[in-house]
Length: 131
Image (cartoon, rainbow, N blue to C red; front, side, top):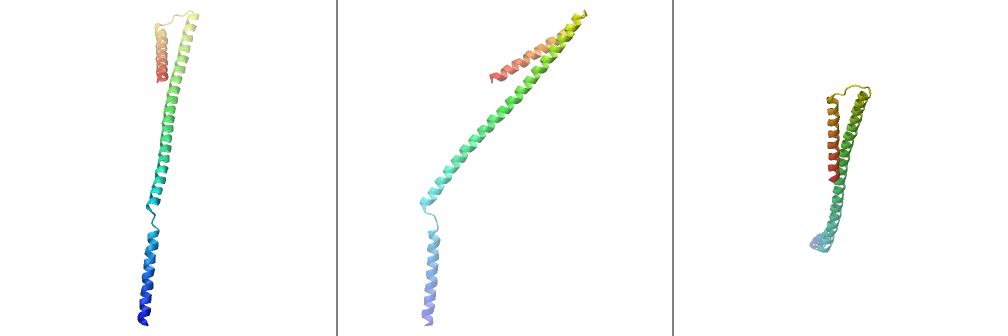
């Protein structure tokens, strides 16, 4: 009787071990399930890659836009300042002439230099536009 009980317990224990091994083996995904998961991962990665490219292009566009805006602002300010200086210098010369005073050649040269700087700034703006 003890032997029978011992054999029964051992068989029952062996059965439990075999069942546990089969249950563990059945929880592993099949090849088709693994390939389906891999396909989903590839699809998701491609979608993410496309979004990354789109975001990068947007960043590049915005950087260029910021750079262009800054350059335009700088050139516009430079042109405006030169125009104000030219107008001021010409006004001073006109006032001197209207009062019958002699105008020094230095004042005329300064106006010419300002006009040359103005032309250079306009040329730089045109180069900017051509880019």
